Image 1 (tube, rainbow, N blue to C red):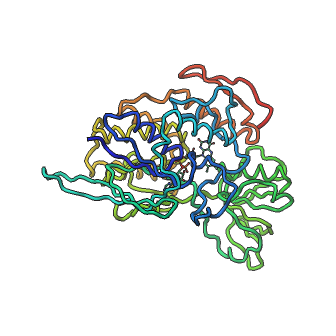
Image 2: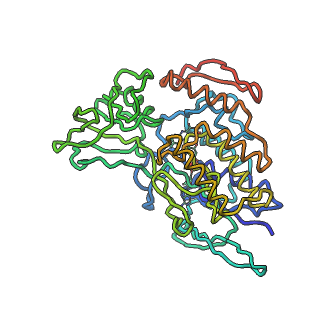
Amino acid sequence: MLKRVAVVGAGAAGLCAARHILSRPNSFAPPVVFELTDKVGGTWCYDERVGTYDNGRPVHSSMYRDLRTNLPKEVMMFPDFPFDPQLSSFLPHQEVQKYLESYCQSHHIRPHIRFSTVVENVKPVVMTTEDEEERTTWEVTSSDSSGCQKTETFDSVFVCSGHYSDPHIPDIPGMENFKGQVLHSHSYRYAEPFSGQSVVVLGAKASGLDISIELAKVGAKVTLSHRRPRLTLPLPSGIQQSSAVVAVEDDGRLRFQDGSVSEADILMFCTGYNFRYPFLDGDQLGLKIQNNVVSPLYRFLLPPTFPSLFFIGICKIICPFPNFNCQVQFALAVLDGSVTLPSQAKMADEVRQELQEKVARGVEQRHLLIMDQDQWEYCQTLAHTAGFPLLPPVVRSLYEEVAQQRQIHPQNYRRLNYRVISETEWELVNRSADS
Ligand code: FAD
């Protein structure tokens, strides 16, 4: 019998899941893709609104107006669907949204998407079959724009709801004393309103750095406050570095770890996001869903006790689209029986061991889902196990080249343009005038 799969979300991960399900008509019925907004693309749909939509639900996308990708299109693309070759390597967000639209159209996914429909609950139902085997199905309850609620049954659920929407704001003692404006990068759209203001940006990862550079360009006085060792990369004038903000004094001034104290008009948290799945009951699934970790997930994909529930794209510091493409194909191989999973106990053991090894390597609890250098071996292992094509080595070498360039030229690396020559080689073609 054809398996029925529910996909939560029509961002890059959900579209990728739908594309591969549709390409296996002998094993799977067409998927049902639930999407709470009226567009495909998720994060890549820029929305000037901050806070909530008209229906009171929180705005999903954290995209800002002038964002250009921090990975070149040659690395970002789904391996079987290149971007337009005329485009430069680093793209404005609009081009990525167009790319996802075109992916959706080319693979005839749109008729299977239920737009403006939110998944409210996903619940496993375990039955014992006549031959004494346990079989899990999933009850998915969704609600459309008119508020009409529906519960349907599926054989599997792909969670593709993203994890860059629920702002993580660390506790800072005395925060209530701060007299200026407080915001999170989730609600940052463009720099002009901050011109002439003193802004303390907390966090110096991708968004913290990018937003600081945007703010400095419009004449904001930026303090980039972070816990990392002092950054040695060249920052534009207008940005000074400081240690982490540790408290707000009674008079509203900020106190930094090095003991210094200063005033600020704006406090901008670029401190990342929480994992949040309001439609799942972690206890019921044997999953711990905390701010920074969802565990245990075998191969960062499925809870050992419910191996027909898949989380696509949960890892951080990865090449997202190629990673989704590997995870989805592995998940479908599990579902169609071409990959046999180890026993629940073995899967749970493997997850435990893997996390212990990471902790022994000095990885902090909150960074356990950061993959970075481990992503290549991870994708190879999934591909070997499920028998689909490996990622070409050029993806890794170009990713590593760009990571280096980003360190050396944080303001200018996006001017570089690359061309992939073969499965293993790329070349630098030119520099574009705009960055
Ligand atoms: P999303 O794009 O977030 O999509 C999730 C979808 O699920 C959304 O459409 C949402 O509406 C829907 N949804 C959520 N909950 C429900 C529900 N309950 N019911 C129904 N639908 C639901 N990646 C790169 O490769 N290159 C970059 O340069 C890059 N820059 C980034 C910059 C920013 C500011 C951010 C936030 C991320 C960036 N990323 C970048 C990472 C980016 O998130 C991934 O590339 C990718 O788009 C994530 O796709 P996703 O499908 O997992 O999640």
